[in-house]
Image (cartoon, rainbow over all chains, first blue to last red; front, side, top):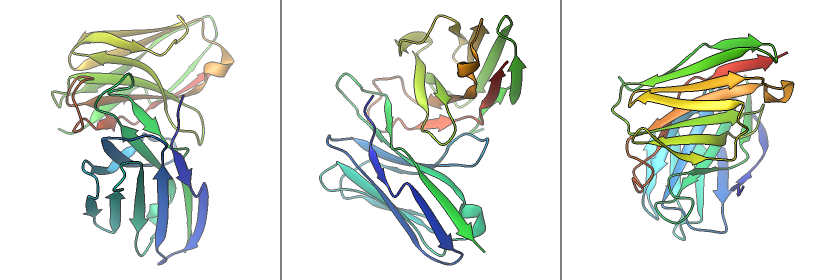
Length: 114
Length: 117
């Protein structure tokens, strides 16, 4: 099935650095979601975006819904060791044959060195 | 209560065994989902129940059999699995049914780590 183009695939950063990752698609989504997954656990919803151009923050996390509705980015400021994990973007369509289904990016594996 | 719970956390089974995975949510959500996830890959959708009716089956082999006894519970019955079925099985729920529109984000449980010997 279709996947979103998520980049980078992996990041190795020092504690305290800022992180940026993004997702792009060839088609429009009505909702963009960002999840974080720790090893052996289920994905946890970090931020949900519902409107084109919307910028939303959750603590040190900031995400934006692209104006074209075909992309989104997630920024993490002042990273800490517990930010380690896999970050997935996901798009949701409100209509069409794939309505209600999440389309996932391939994930960004984040490693934070103390 | 904003949780999706799954039991068991870990399951090891032989290829001739019959077992079941359980999922529960008490958020009043009307859609529930089963996903399969391999290591470092995104979740892959298997089944969707919307208002307690099976709405989507993503061409999953019949050795996986879903069941939705009521609006809060979701089961996945397993029989005659293959070693390649070993994976993390995730349950999720969303507030509205499949046609719920934009405000229908999915919330995931912690998963069941399944190993088929």
